[in-house]
Structure formats: structure tokens, C-alpha cells
Length: 208
Image (cartoon, rainbow, N blue to C red; front, side):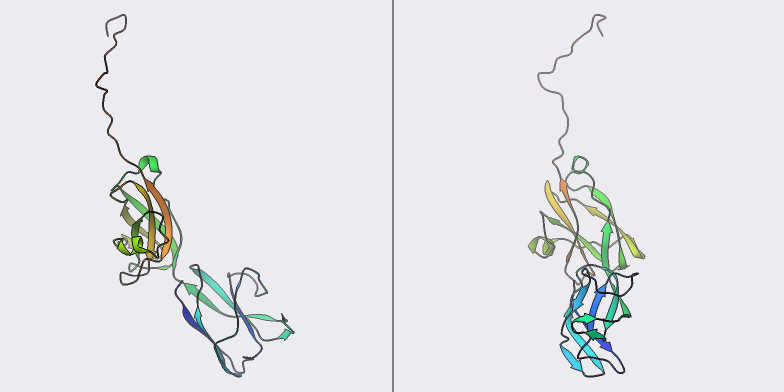
């Protein structure tokens, strides 16, 4: 979710009349309602380049960049693939243990799958139902992974010291804020079983 600048170069480039969109990979470039359109570049250099400022792709993944500079009115006549973008970050993960099995301050493993995951990535456990952009996530300790290999990474984390809801947040590095919600969980109070003070033994007919 970090903004970046996107520059498209060409020779010549129909900078005034072109259309650009970012879409899921593997398919044919075409008008796609689920694609991310980039409207009205901030900087135009006629026949040379277009620059879009502050582009935000909301989810990690790999994407195709499609360009159309042949239009009939507002309708594209010919889309073409001009590049690909890899947005680093988590895509999926294992879930925390079920509440019945998870008490306060209990360790468990969290495995995350995504794009360009590195040992620089950090997880944090925020109390409550955090959006990973609030005070709770800012106060969470940042944990390094046990290992990471670009497509997946493994962490050992602990539930909060008090019972209640918690949120697992991810950030790209120790110097960056935790910004992405990975999973939510619930830690329940742990109670020791004990015999009631009024418990009395009952003997069967054999006296056992």
C-alpha cells in the first residue's frame, strides 16, 4: 500500500491519448472491470513519456501493465502488454490456533506466503481488533522471521499477556511501521481444573 511513481516511456508515445491499466497476470490485455486504471498522468512529455504520481496498489502480488494508445472515442482498439510489476508483501497465511487451544502468552508458529518476502520483514501482535495503522500496532514489538525464502516465511509469535482479541500485523522492515493485517485471533483465559471442596467419593457394591 505504499505509493510510488510510475513512468511509461515510448518512441514515439501517444502520451495525450493513451490509456493505462494494471491487471492480474496471465490473461490477455483487455478492458477489465477488476483492473486498476491510471487516469490522467501528472506529467506529460508529448511523444516521449507519461508519469503517474502516488500510485497505490492495495494488495501484494504480481501484475501486468497494459497500455492502449489506439482508441475510438473512449474505447480502446488495441491493448498491449508493456511491463510487469511485483508488489512485495504477504498474500496468505496460516491461522492462529483455535481459541479453545490458545491462552495468553502462548507461542505458536505463523507461516506467510507472498511476494519477495525477506528476513527484513517483521510481524507484530497488536491487542484488540486493530487495523494495523493505529496506536495498538505502533506499540507492538516487531519480530523477525525464523527464516524467509522470497515466496514464504515462518515466524514464532506469542499471544498477548491478557485474554482477548488480537491482530497480527506485518511490516516490510524494522524501520517501517506495521501496516498490513495478516490474521485476527482470540486468546481465552486458562483455568486450572481442581476438585470441588464438596466432592465426596462414592463406593460401588464391591467397595471400590
